[in-house]
Length: 159
Image (tube, rainbow, N blue to C red):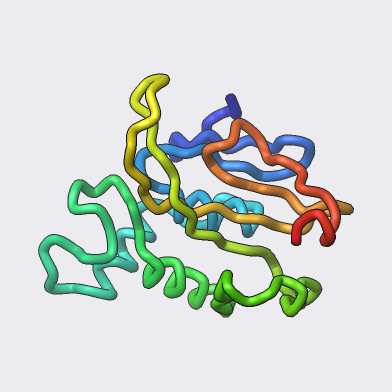
């Protein structure tokens, strides 16, 4: 397991790559930090974005009512906007050959994930954020549920 940083996240440098490990329902936060390769977004900052997006809503519609994370796309987009970055939507029904990879910083994916209770996989799917980024000679899966970044390989292997 990666060492924990001052915020309690498993965040290590594995082979020179920054990688935060999953904690609570903070996968959107981890995906952004892993994509940016630094501990940039904190839970308090993400909660602040939620409050700005819906200041008078109780519970806040942009995160878990339990305060454990589970941030939605609005929080992700607003967080990227504070850095002058923008997400471009890609419909998975479009052919990947049409995707121009070279100008892209990385990919944020929202995929179904089956949670576990101990060693048992539960029969439901929940949304999970992960990031993929080109670093050095390879693309890497920086999913916070992985114990370390996983090399995907070349652009051809990524597609």
